[in-house]
Length: 110
Length: 113
Image (cartoon, rainbow over all chains, first blue to last red; front, side):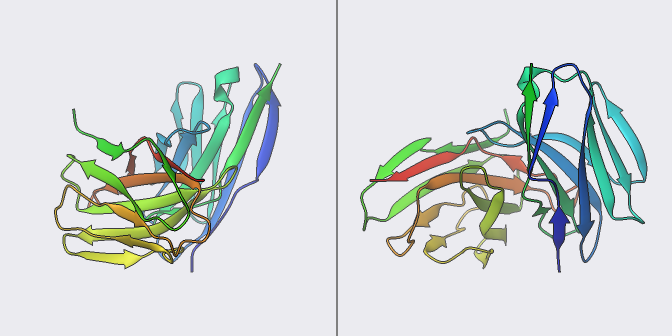
């Protein structure tokens, strides 16, 4: 079966750092995606991790530990526009469909 | 530019009516998907298709139907059998032989009056 867990909601202050965790148990693993989705809009791609370790892309970084079934998205220097939902999704492998977590709603406050 | 086009963006329907949401992609992707999203909720898979003339039910297929007559097109019909159709509908596609990254359309918001 497929199971992906993320916190439902998080709140953080503008300028701070926030870490959004994702744990997964899936039959097959090729890689893990993070998407950002603003209310009423389509999700947009943030990162894709295949190998263990941290990948940095500007203010956003994503970490993966395949042995622990664990990933996190790290957002630095938070801005109000970062208020959105963040979706974790696992790609089990070739000819498979992505499995999404329920998403984490992040609210950035002043 | 390559991408996915959904239409209409907003749609109103009376109870008992069927409506069809359009989804077209020019990314040459074999796989296409329809998701439903309710306010404050995650994505739930309705139907997906990995090849022309073939499709599979997702987690919440009841009350919906699809067709895949062309690689580029994957329309979704919301039938009168769908008890609570008001939602945000997202179409997506990907190349399952590569990274599997999903590319999304802008979404269609359906409201039942």
